[in-house]
Structure formats: C-alpha cells, structure tokens
Length: 241
Ligand code: ADP
Ligand code: MG
Image (tube, rainbow, N blue to C red):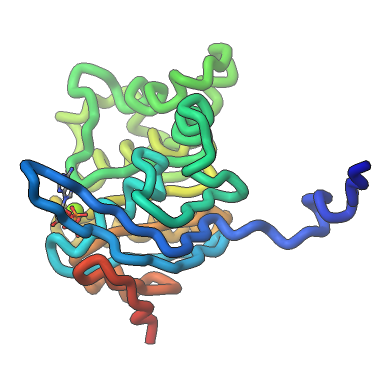
C-alpha cells in the first residue's frame, strides 16, 4: 500500500524545488573517430528564482551545458533533473512538452522573423500551446509590456534597434510563462547601452521570480548575477565572490 503524504506535495507550504539538479553529468561527443569530453562530471544545483551566469573559454562546454538545461539533448552519463523530471528517464514527448512550456530560450542572434511584427514574433513562441486567440493576444501584450515594448507591437524587426529586437526575442521566450529562461550570449551583438537595456529587462523578470541562466563572455553581465559559474575544459567552478 502506498500512503501519499499530502503535506509533502502542497505547493503552498513546500519549499520550491530547485530549478535544476545536476549530478555527475558527462557529455561526450564522438566525431570522425575523435572523442571530445565536453562535460566531465558536472555537479551543480540551480535554485528556483536564481540568476546565474556561466562564463569560461570557448570550447569549455557552456553551450553543451545550456543544451542539457534546455532539454535539447541528454547527458552521456549522470543525471539532469529539471524540477522533478530526470532527462534520462523522460520520453521524447515529455522532453518536447518541457521545451514548449517550461523553458524559454534567447540567443545571441535574435532570430526574429523579419516579415512579422514584434507582436506576431512573440505569438510564435505560443504556437505549441494551442491557446485561443483572446488568451494568446493577452499573453503577447503582457510579454511585450514586461520588456517595456508595449508601444512597439506593430513594428517589424527592421524598424527596431538591436536592443529592442533582443527584447522582442525575450518577450517571445517568456510569453509561454516558462519556469526558466536560458540565454546564450544575449548581449553579444549589442553595444553597451543596449546591453544595459537587456540586463535591466532580465533583472525585472528575475525579480518577478523567473529563474535565469545566462552564458556570457561579458563580465559586466556576470557582475549583475547573484551567482557566477565558470566552465573550463568541461569542469564547473563557482566563482561567485
Ligand atoms: P562553449 O560553448 O563553451 O564554447 P561547447 O559546449 O560548444 O563550448 O563545446 C565544448 C566542446 O565540445 C568543444 O570541444 C566542442 O568542439 C565540442 N562539441 C560541441 N558540440 C559538438 C558536437 N555536436 N559534435 C562534436 N563535438 C562537439
Ligand atoms: Mg558556446
């Protein structure tokens, strides 16, 4: 007989699960007979509501780690828990659902569709959810407002600055109301002023409870994080002062 302890699953009293728990994570690529150990036994926990940056040299494993956090790939060995889902045990349908509902992604290149307006680009992020039109429009308006672009919904990317375009990309990523936002060099293509614009938007979202994991080469970005990690040759180090 199984006794279910209701108190243990009561979300109002239970402490929030960590967003991520990684234990002994390795990732090995084999290409043309050459073996690359991209991650060599990564142990790390990322708290719900945290703001974490990941720095480190090119080839250190940052993008590989972000792909695992985004449920875009699975580890060679070890465990990646997203909330309570273990990637190694999840079905392809569960992984797809995680990506569609729980995880927002932002890239260095904004990846907006040039022929669509900002609002239409944001709506693209909601496509997999199959919302009705009213709910979709409300979420698009809300996401644009959260990044300070309420007045720009009917502008196309070509009519927006780089910083505004990246904020549209962030709105697209958060419109589904994900549990975490992952960003790979989100300010890599932006000048200083636009970088600050993006950081301010990210900090507002984090203050509202969104968990942020940001890969960056820019120490000005990293110094704004609550926690700084460094990945070097597949090994992770906490370098928070
Ligand atoms: P970073 O993002 O820190 O620059 P990556 O995670 O992209 O590092 O790469 C880590 C290592 O894994 C590098 O040696 C890279 O060449 C290798 N690597 C990454 N992706 C693949 C892949 N799909 N196939 C083979 N090797 C890969
Ligand atoms: Mg990379």
